[in-house]
Length: 254
Length: 184
Image 1 (cartoon, rainbow over the protein chains, first blue to last red):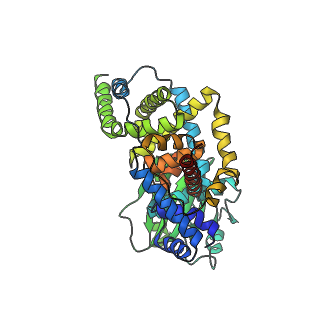
Image 2 (tube, rainbow over the protein chains, first blue to last red):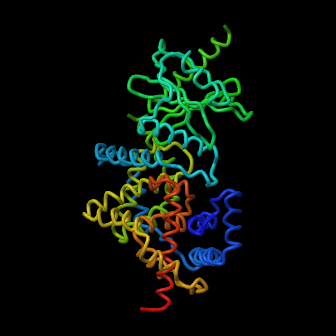
Image 3 (spheres, rainbow over the protein chains, first blue to last red):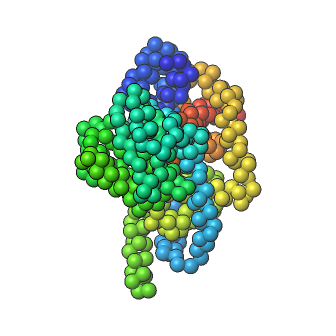
């Protein structure tokens, strides 16, 4: 680790946001570098002074509390249009931000990280013109393409008859690991289906979530973790998952 | 209609129980972002009204970051109203891209210098003088006590940016603190 890296990372160390490995790296560096050790000490002092030295919080005036209390619920004075505009903008901002989340050194709920990385990968696939490495609507072309490229055989299923067109596959990265991605289209919407090796724990049933405005459906299939991300609505994504699961079962039965 | 009214009341009660405990957090962030008591009160009020109207869209999890994200949107609208959007937001990016200035002063200052205790009011003033993006990151971390991930979500930037903003914010704050001790 260089001093330049340590300059930034030591803050994450102070904030207890580093995983054990990276925390050790920063500490090892500081142990052998007087300058960075001094920086670390000095910022710990600053932190201490901020937290212990005086109250940095403001207390909301009682009049404000009362007036909010009175205003909830407020059926009148709702300008939905401007409100929605504001929120649409917020959505765009966070989508753009999600697209560039690259840092994986921070300790956070792994589950949340996987979700946000899946969304990032989904956004990247739409923005960078890198939706597919193998472009084909034929499952018998897409499935063998993964052979030798990744150590799992993702189920590739043609769902064109059910309204979800297979458009290809690609490799992507989630949680620092290669994952197979099968790409479907529903009208103008893209569904990215991420397939990773399961880690033993299988979900009892499918799980639907909404993160940053995207719908996510997760389920397990024969020891594989499946995660579908799209901007189509919840019901349609759930329908996609159900049809996929049914078709996968049918394919195994034959 | 009577039933809908009942639903609204239920929603209002749930909202009050979930959101009102964080009013001080919301108001505090508004004070630091807008640097003005009256505007901060207006912004906090607007934040709660919006939050209530959109309470259905809240998907669970900690509600504090959700409220603070709404507050931040309200404050940005306020910057725009003041016509100060460029002054507040663009300067942030500029400040971030510059590697000289106060930030490097903080690094070159003698490392052994220790910070004298400052009273809360002086600390508040020093924080308030930080450039916007750094101030925002620092307050969300040190005062609102959000995690990096939560700050990233609230401010709409990657976690790495949060980390570097915090590093700069603390560097600037430390330099200002030391300057304060030396006196004008």
